[in-house]
Amino acid sequence: MSDHEGIRHVEIGVADLARSLDFYRDLLDLAPAGGPAAGPGVAWLSAGPALLKLVETAEGDLGGWVNDDLQRGIRHIGFKVGDVDLRAERVRDAGVPFTLPPLDAVGGVRIAFFQDPDGTHLEITSGYLRYHRVASPELAERERLAALSRPRTAPPVFDHVAVTSADLDAALAVYRDRLGYEVIGQISQDQDPRGFLITYLLAGEAVLEVFTFTAPTTASPWTPDPCRRGFRHVAIAADDPEEAAFRLIEAGAQVTGDGALVDANGALVDVDGVPLLIA
Image (cartoon, rainbow, N blue to C red; front, side, top):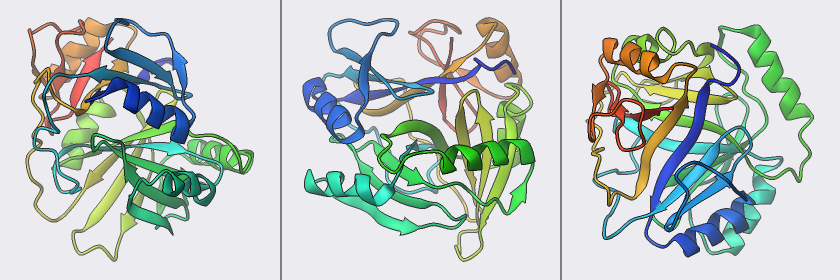
């Protein structure tokens, strides 16, 4: 995988673009950015190694997405910050409730969760992971050094997309074997009765977190509804988009939308219902 391949942007549907811009600019300090397919009802925001694309929709909702990690598909996006508690003060002062208040998580990082005005689930995290199983010592060390050099007041930068999969081997066949994402390591949530395992892969300059469980998972509710709010797709950069799309189809991904493999009007959905746009 070349350095510029990986997660390029995440598209999020919103009810009120002005309200969402205030939210992401004021709480997350994301700056306006240029992007393809700009126009009325669309805004691009810079988030460090990836972009956010906000799309104002007509009447719509989260389309069956619920805040339960056992539901397959996209679970949340995460941002690295200099200090979770410092950023959490701003979130709290803005009247935004936490779905998970700041705490020390398994793996040695500090985390907190909250939702944007339309229910999109967001995480902020600080520190670096102490992986229970390290697959790439070099990548783990790079993460540690980056965390140690990050100032306490550093603003959020895009870190990861988290997805739930029914089968880790099937997910790795897509992301590791077809897209070339390197496994960094794994964290086991041994105290979780659901048998929670997180596998971390480097996806360009961002990270893909794959959640798997020994407990049964439920199907992803994602559909290509143009009115859908919340997570709409993850855009994946590729040197040869069409060739990458065919590799994903070989791994079980299916075509949605108008059937286009490399156009903004079409997307692929992986075996767990994660919508992927190859560009």
